[in-house]
Image (cartoon, rainbow over all chains, first blue to last red; front, top):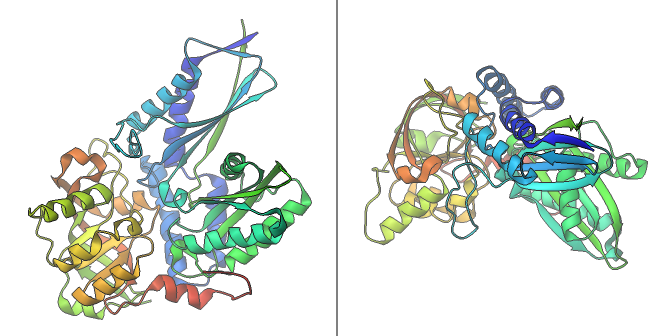
Length: 285
Length: 190
């Protein structure tokens, strides 16, 4: 049996909350630089230049890239042979969020209930997705999610007869209606199949891919490419000011589904696309 | 792209001259207010009270910052999505608000009220909060302190970069820009 101290998990989450909110990933930075070179709209170029300057200022001063430092969305893939000691795993994660958002001067945006709407004061609770996996490691992803892009996301229970074409129309329509609001150039995460909830979680997880990484299934990868081309023809452009650079990537994941089902979820991420992953290994006792 | 230096409060001539797509560098005093502050302002007005500052001729920035570190004026300070304020906006425009700084699309009701009462909607780049905070030289909470990041702040800004999104005539850069660059194809809605 391998073990891991819950305090290490807390420290790791805290560190990731701060870093991912203040430092733009190299993958996104180089993708945005390519977008600036490709963009033809003057207002679009202006927006992209501002976004790239922002990344420099944020990293140098450890100032959050965006004032909406988001809901702390956490993915934890827990090895089934790992034993966590010294505390409760969910509480260890929430404590990491609490310390990260407090010590990192991040904005606390979570309210205690959808109707009472009183700020919890420390950005907890996090939204946590657990997977049980083989092995004795834990892989943790912190993906702070801003609400400007989250609010433009959507789910549709398509009819199987609508097929791939119906799914594609829904995805393009969702991005089209989102327009400027999710801060383009965006990443479009898509989950198709399973049940309503499964599709939504797949869509969010799809946002974690690096730009340039396609679905391993070549047929789905081709759909991703086709959708990206269509979305970039919408004319929305950086920040919605008009232009050719509306999306950086479309990432689609699929799952087996019911004979009567064709659920599709579209989760949109803003141009910062914050996420960071760390694997912690259990130690032999 | 035309670029103008703009000092608040704007003159009637500036309000009438600025065109969707123009770039402006905003200097002077602006006030912050977002969801909860808007709700409280409107509730106060409906209960017969008065607004916490004289909004005539002023500009509101839809923004709730991150906490400032020691020695900083303000934390990250970029715009939030304006559409959530659409419900409250016409009443503020009617009372003389002449500028809004935010990001994202506005409803036709807001655009109509902007034309009727004379106002301009400016866009700051969403997700550029660190950059935009460097243009804020002073910040002070003047009302609704209990709302935390949503409190009303009086900001002094210097050359804060923005784009005219919707002008006084109702021209909307989001529609104009998109029309200019879209490649129409069958089957795309909206």
